[in-house]
Image (cartoon, rainbow, N blue to C red; front, side, top):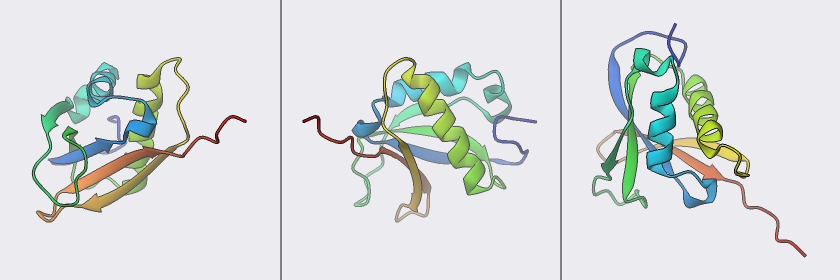
Length: 119
């Protein structure tokens, strides 16, 4: 069984990391590749973001995924990789959502909940 708990045909999935998460695209891609189960799915790579009115990020992580993986499994795997990539750094609660670009490509948006201001 692979990192995402299933087998299937790879398809590129974009991961957009908001700054509030505190993990860079390069850190995420490296941690994805460090997971011993990662090669079963494929290596992540960092690429310039395509031009699309919905995208804010300038770079994205592209992870090859089986086409039949359920969103909840993908969200869980992405959240785990973000937490491992952060190491000992404190990170906010990780929120994972999904949207589609105008081209139809899936984007997993990883954001952090706002931290309360210190008084």
